[in-house]
Image 1 (tube, rainbow, N blue to C red):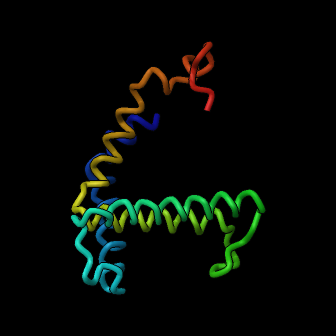
Image 2 (cartoon, rainbow, N blue to C red):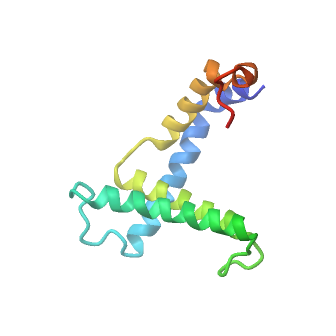
Length: 130
């Protein structure tokens, strides 16, 4: 079912994701986070990836303690920190001029064909349990 949906929305889905990439990176630039930063400098990409990792760690801590977010107290911390991780990923993709939307949709389509992503194969001995 979802494969057919993916095939139908391939182009529009990629465009929507890339629109979010443009928005996240544009807001980060507008806020000065990229002032004087050369994305091609040796440690910029590793530092930005570590910031993504820190958001994921914060999401895990929120889930572990079942916390609500400090800044958006009506939302669970895991939800807000996962949003932060996505914002950071999209910002970096924008800075690197990556086609994140196209890659995401293509990867989702590819995963529908993977034998190691099929329920029966995962249940087999030495199958992916998680």
